[in-house]
Amino acid sequence: MAKTKSTAKSKSTTGALSRPRPKPRASGFGVVDIHLEVPITAPREIAWRALTTDIARWWPRSFFTSPRTTSFVFETKLGGRLYEDYGDGNGLVWATVIELDAPSHVLLVGHLTRQYGGPAHTFMRFALEDRDEGRACTFRLDDTVFGYVSDKLKRNLTNGWQLLFRDTFKPYVERSTA
Image: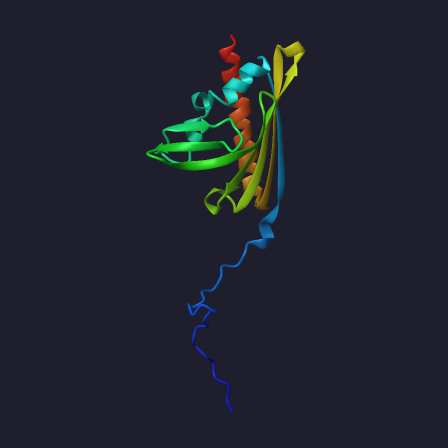
């Protein structure tokens, strides 16, 4: 008896036609740790207020994901969101607060979709530590990303965090105390 190739699609247990699943990008799965320290010539409480309450004043528009973004918001409470507000209830959540010890540190968890270099999860810790008897502080960022992480994503995150916190946040804080 000759073998014939069937062209019929298989049915799942629910009777729906099954679709081929996309192949996972397993070769890029991994973990990336990014660490950044930025000395700031300002008291920790002033830096904390800038990091949280004043974030929309210093966060660069070039970091927005959409031209519709009207503001960048940091809800500094457990379960609060770090997000872009497009208006009318629309927007993009960057991360959610899972630990808060103000004005010392905040821990956030976020998701990176394929559109933003993922799929991956990220745990970001922003911390402020006193220096010089409270006249200055050090901002510390620890970002651990796991999932699909490429060399390009690591470079983009490293460069992006440096631009945000060393080149934008630090000068904003220091100008506000001058």
